[in-house]
Length: 480
Ligand SMILES: Cc1cc2nc3c(=O)[nH]c(=O)nc-3n(C[C@H](O)[C@H](O)[C@H](O)COP(=O)(O)O)c2cc1C
Image (cartoon, helix red, strand yellow):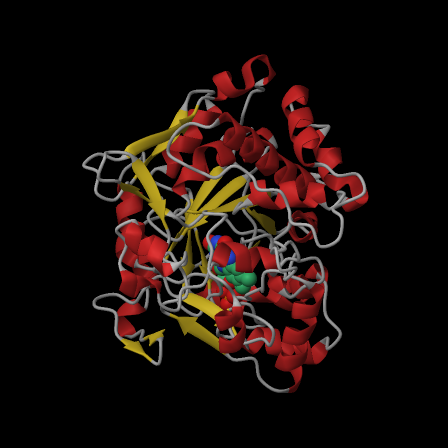
């Protein structure tokens, strides 16, 4: 089967678990591109199973996994039919590393399969998955899991995703596929890969290569990726710095005022140069309004990628109380969103919505004891004795320094792994009975979301959001 034409509206990938399979499925069913978040799916699927798998969705998907014995091992390990006893912590899952670990591979491949399978269930619309370049260690095996479920599109940003086109091509051919991972202090990168034959043996079906969209914020990056076949994506999402989630840092030396990076005209992308690369592109960051799609089409884009408007839709994974509060604040007063230069362990600026009870409040931030038990954003580094260690600037400062990290880099960091997992209602319970506090990210251009909140003060569905974004006269597909 040839590549299918991608639609005009992409519902952006939103981690952890905000762009859930429920959200992506609704968007895809309506003929647009629904994208599930591929971030930390091993964790979220394991936790949903420990919460008793309400609705039986994970188990339904597991029953369709090509290797029944592998699916059974995951079920055996994590499923609690009656859910967790209230107040008990979720059990830990194995952490990512550069060394091969079958337990990590099995949970990751199965979890990525589950999320995509559920998003694709019951319709023939297109479904995508979003990964973060920064979480390189998970990418090969995660992509294999998504491909086993027939994912149509892989979307990736937060870095330079030059290795992904070749990875997808290799996996689709049933060959080992991998990425070179940077290890700080090491002269050579470490290869992290998955061999589909070795992992699945006789259960390995024929795989189809998904299309690949690279998220870029600078023309030079798009031009670099487009130059050679092995790095060339099938299209771009061009994301401005008002987008929710992580943002590219300003070009040149980062100037910070009041904790926020200052962006200037150098950060504006020349869309005529992007168009000249000859690949389709979608515009993201503040395009989620009634005007957004027609502006993008007028600029030569194939369509738009929208996040915030869908993050607050009924089907998103975001905790209902956080969603309601955000919609209320937007409709009635204000919901300030900061571009925090120092919150994310990745070092990229990160958008933080100032919602009460979240880590955006200094008192909530100060009250949390620092710890690092999930580790998705850890950086591998070479230890003095030649081993690979892992550190994260959001871990306890003394641990970070002991591992050779910079003490100055720890101030103000937020453990996004725990905070974003808490924001979808899967926060860890600590020994003192407290549940990890959440953090919410949204885009800083909330004009479209505010208009929607005024129109639907009690909330909206993904279908309402699509209706708002895409009037009937613009509804036909993009041309790729
Ligand atoms: C809650 C939330 C989480 C996000 N998480 C991710 C992510 O994990 N990966 C990613 O590539 N983009 C992420 N984004 C960016 C969106 O995919 C999208 O590009 C962006 O939100 C578009 O800007 P808008 O919010 O103004 O519509 C996130 C955005 C939001 C609002």
